[in-house]
Length: 171
Image (cartoon, rainbow, N blue to C red; front, side):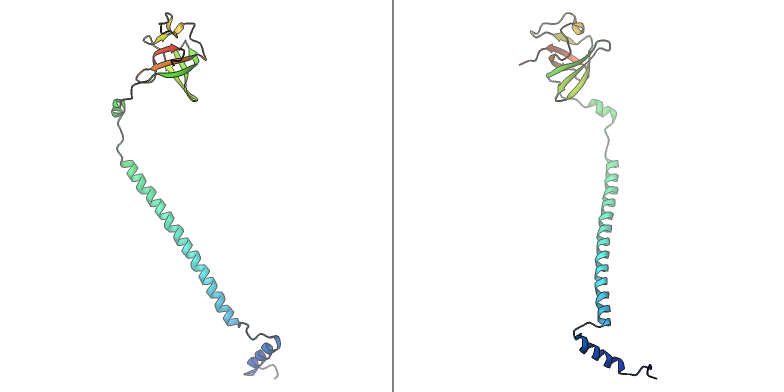
């Protein structure tokens, strides 16, 4: 009968343990459980708040993308006729360096800027001039036209051909 539970024995034993081990201010198991639950619920609220913020930002980004796409598709596009009517500024004289001369295809590849190469077509109307401004009688076949030669050019209005080419660089 010694093993039977007697009321008040548990509290007496607890009081004796507290006095023996100096646990007057120690938390009971119930207090620890309440504090643990409180800490976990705060962490859970923080996690849910973070999930909410991320989902709102994601929905905003998706909505902005859809609205942007709808607006972009409704913008008027220029027709090919409007593009053809669009006038370019008149061509200007440019300094260039001859990089490649293709007499068979009647084209000339020129270095027209910092690392910018452009190929121009040469037709019967293209004039070739020497440093003094005199017209070269052989035209495109003139021996003075050499690769790596510095020239001054005037492109055609469509920027595909040359109106004239002058050897040397104008100062």
